[in-house]
Amino acid sequence: MKKYYFTSESVTEGHPDKLCDYISDTILDEALKQDKNSRVAVETFASANKITIAGQITTNAKLDIEKIVRERIKEIGYDNSELDIDYRTCEIDVNITKQSSDIALGVDIGGAGDQGIMFGYASDETEEYMPFAISMAHKLSKRLTEVRKTGILPYLRPDGKTQVTVEYEDGQVKRIDTILVSAQHNEDIDMEKLKKDIKEKVINEVIPSKYLDENTKYYINPTGRFVIGGPLGDTGLTGRKIIVDTYGGYARHGGGAFSGKDATKVDRSSAYMLRHIAKNIVANGYAKKCEIQVAYAIGMEQPMSIYIDTFGTNTIPEAQILEIINRNFVLTPKGIIEYLHLQEPIFTKTTNYGHFGKKDLPWEKVITLK
Image (cartoon, rainbow, N blue to C red; front, top):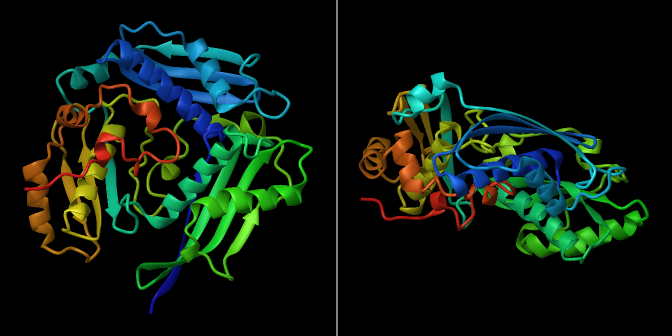
């Protein structure tokens, strides 16, 4: 038997990088609500009690960016500049220009907004066709936010991280070896109470008991203190959590971030489409695991290449799977946007706890392949 361990991490919506992702995606959605043809590439930077918004937006929408920023910070729960950031008093700096006319030349005729490589992946390890470790890590992070916002653990603050190590045996999930949870908290909380509460109210509520045993290791706030968090504890930046956003390191990544980009940016739209294709290859029984890569050139419609790997789990030859892909799916930027309805303001739904594995997103739909 071959035994190995694999680890994935997730972060809460209050993590400084995720705060930035959420602000950028909200600006994108607000632009799309008013003008579905908006071109958006927005970066957010958070440091101490300051938020900087920069990038390119070409749109007919009227955007109150300062209002958007303050509302998102408030929604996440940041209201204390001495511990993280305060939505009421933080400084906001906006530096927005229009999309380069050189880029627009290719995009306007339906070509890709940039060159690059993108990957999509799916496996049958979980019911959502995601790798097990990242699925569990996301559930823990989401639960951390739920117990804070609902008042179950009212002493928690918005920042937090989780990490799950899974033991595999012959390629199958056997058990969870290690769970790590780091949660920002108020200064006066007793650490033993915090550890007990997180074990009972977070871990035990979301991790199936069949994967836990007497040898599972738990590390809860291992430094013993996590009071200073958010942008005061660490700067935040849009697009820095690309592995958290995708497959937890279990599959390859092309390198392009998602948040703050409209769908003409194939870094985002193509990665969504490839996830959709890979998931349907697995869901239709053609393989137990599937990874797909495509490459684009700026201004060109068709991908320069397409590659598929089923890791020896395919039930039909991979050449036939490629034929099924070509028969069922269009991979031009325009075709992807139309197929997945990516001019709709749906992107803030994707920002936190992974862009994949959520039932209400169009690229997660299972279809019958012909």
